[in-house]
Length: 175
Image (cartoon, rainbow, N blue to C red):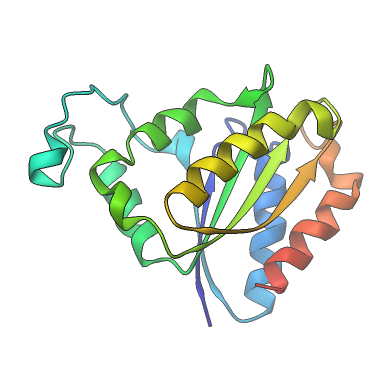
């Protein structure tokens, strides 16, 4: 049994990214894994201040939910990162959270990582997000195991009738 942490940057409850997170979770739970899903939009995560106090202390001076998120990331065997694509990039909430990895960036490696990327474009329009997230998470010392593409979806729920649903379930089950 593996501990799986899903970080959903979907701003909409039951939005397309969120729906795929739940599919991944269903598959993983069916395979007997422990899964926790954190909706980043329900968490208090401030912007990094670039004060670099964390270099000395190992902790951020900002007191919000990031320390808990980082603790859970360190303990997880598998991390799933999900984001909608806005103007060919990850959304701002996910970028804010990633910027706050700084206090523990040396301790966030050794995980299997899955990406879930959704957007109204086809894969070519979503590819930059996959490239950025792969660079970030592999640069931290993680292994990117796969990417689930929620292509050509925009309105809430459009992803439900796509092959991405089955791909998300299978990826979770196959962890």
